Amino acid sequence: KAGVTQTPRYLIKTRGQQVTLSCSPISGHRSVSWYQQTPGQGLQFLFEYFSETQRNKGNFPGRFSGRQFSNSRSEMNVSTLELGDSALYLCASSLAGGLETQYFGPGTRLLVL
Amino acid sequence: AQKITQTQPGMFVQEKEAVTLDCTYDTSDQSYGLFWYKQPSSGEMIFLIYQGSYDEQNATEGRYSLNFQKARKSANLVISASQLGDSAMYFCAMREATTDSWGKLQFGAGTQVVVTP
Image (cartoon, rainbow over the protein chains, first blue to last red):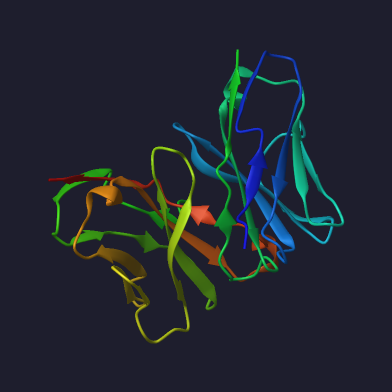
């Protein structure tokens, strides 16, 4: 079974631009969670989607948004990029978002200049 | 408040030796899950082992075992017979079974392990 895939793997943007990251979960998984990883803040939860609905959201500004499609693929969007948005963005999928294991993709490294 | 505490920022271990990575957690929930992940320099988070709060037996997965002490709120990872490929950052994480924790893993700061020949 194919793992979680994320595209693109690397991205360079400038301040003020917007970016869209994509995540395809493991086949059959309906829950997709997004995390931001930075050296200073560590791993922080962004949001979780299940059956096209956002069920949970972390403490991030409204510039961070996401959505999930009927095939469970998910996208996250960051508008008006700031230097501090430079990070590794990780997507994880699980069957239903309960206590079952989340499996992570390889991540998207975003650099904001 | 920090929910997951990993007190060891980094450690060296010799090849073929065992290593214990410490993790303590804080929750008032009765139902929760504890996870360990490995993150090599490539960045991908690799799942290692899971322990449920109601599991009476300590979890084991190959060379990985989890020393679960519920009363102490401790979930230490033991890696037996370390290999050079075990060099990575290791994260302890918890998922609480509450509706405001849907899909949300809470991670510790991680422990950097370097395996030496």
